[in-house]
Image (cartoon, rainbow, N blue to C red):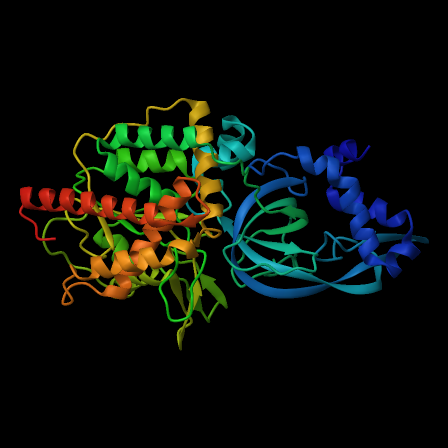
Length: 505
């Protein structure tokens, strides 16, 4: 019944009929009315199509998007009584921005409720396979994207919920787009300082991650596939550790835990390595650095006080999004940059080192914590960012030698390992042994070039990542020894490569 109604009637009219079933009860208990609407729509919600440029307004659709800005609440009446020509009827205010479509006397009734308002944008860096998986098919994905000129790049979403969401949260929304509100002279009223489409949310979900206990054989196959593609087992180990890395803690006055920024050196062309990473991760933002991009595009969000809007920065992404800074298109030697360049270089370095991004509010900057794994791709050593881990790659990278089923297993395994990182502790029985091993390592460090506490912090991150790959609940001496072995091999390979191309590491 509801399915048929939704196919032939605007969703707001269906809500009206639900409202009219028991007006007195719904006026007294709006939450009961809203719950009843969501319950009756639940079956339709599960099968509604993704939004596309050809979707009629007021048809129930679904979208997966990210909160870019929070605008605060607005207030609306739960219902109204419409009088005209001796006939009166009740209508719900749930999916309405205005009562001006009724050319009759409107009497507002019932309680006033709050709607939370958020500016939504497409998920930055969403990979095609991840979107296809949610859309249901590649055909639906293509239809939903449509031609660039007709895509909705930003819209205002209105939620009738008790909870509040943080900026950069990814949500799956189910609801309807509505026509802009017009005044008596037919001029569109702005629901946002920029005129953007408005979307009324019937219900929402957060993306689900299929967590399966990682299998040792799957991790081994993934490592072997990366080794085959990169042509170097040590490089494969470091890339795999970056893929499972996540910033999950920031102890006071300390560096972020399990942030693992990686500089992949020696690449003339980034195409193959970017393809490998996007095949394995759901959200990958490929930032191809050029003088024009660095100069003209702000990397951090900027507040525009004239329009009262927050301009989205290039690096304003959802938690867990891997950002690839690709330097392979930069010109050789010196080049001129202007405008945003100094701020952008500072933003890149700050995100990499502290896992924070500073929003620019004009009179002040406000830091926000992020979880943004970083990969820098460069022909030589990165020209902009000094990463703790630089890995020299051999020439001749190939594609992943994996089947579709193996790729699915690899993706699930990577996401599960990310969630397990925060539970890995330091084995107290072996903590003293790890400390003693570091004391021996510290004796070999050059105090003019290497900071002992920072080196220890970086070694513990390596140990945690290695423990996760081995399915261990804690860091032990074996993890420490393997971390030392990986570091030794990485530095040897890096120094050999640097010597071959006349670079100083």
